[in-house]
Image (cartoon, rainbow, N blue to C red):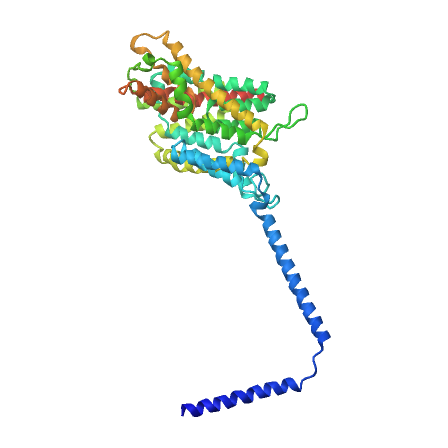
Length: 441
């Protein structure tokens, strides 16, 4: 049966082939000219499709970052990666350096101008977020959170330590003079000078008012937009407190003086803590009304903390609110370092001035502490190391001072004493910013 089916199948296949061949034999003769035309048209269509595909790929490539990248973009991206590395590996202000580093990378991914992508392009998402920096909205909110988490007890218990915070502000005015010497105009020099206070939010606030690329001078020239370089410089030196300050402490303060033990501060009542933010607000803002947005929010936040009736508000200010604002501030400030705008001679000068000003501020606090000891007797003497905490990098500077004291004497705990000039440095830098703003705005 299988053989029979195989034979019938073979016959059927032969018949099918014969019918196909017969159809071909009775068909009209082939027109080779028409065949050539058809072939040529097919080749032309193929070439056109290949050419179109290459044009599409070329156009796609023109929109990628590879086609628009510059050496400046790669330099800034490397700097952003270094910031992130320092924040993670060495714990240098990770809450600041990691958002800023990510922002630097975001701001330097190359893009095609005009697509509302960059932070300086009107209508882009980054530009909307950057509005809080340009208009000085974020810094007062940061100060609100700082006030809600700060204990002013050490300053209330020993008010004379406020002088150390004031002495450290010498860095602000030294930087101001240095910026003028290097050719910056008055508003730009004033904005650059505040880097000496080592206070990022204050630096952003003042530069947004004085060096925002919008103000026009009397001679018709437009003030440069220096917000990005000033903010990055201020935050960079805040993060480098553990690197910059210890060598200066060991250089200027003898080992004997580094071992000075300060008497415990007196106990501060809750009533004093509640009265302090109100009195301090009135005194400081009457001296420097232009600093009201910063100092007003600082002492308002502290009042929320100490009143005992608004714990929910204080908790929100010192946790959720300050965290959100820190993220937005860090990323947008980092993104403002777009290579074609950031990598300039002015930026390099600002970073150089920032380094010098931070050194001068630290030295000013240390030397003034030694000067104060000339008028203090017995156990009223202060450990001169706490003068370095007069810069407003709170609380990192106080921690570095405390760590340096422990190296000289493992039983010498001066952290609470160092917090007094540290928080007074925050107040002092805000007052200095207000004074500069009053004269130069």
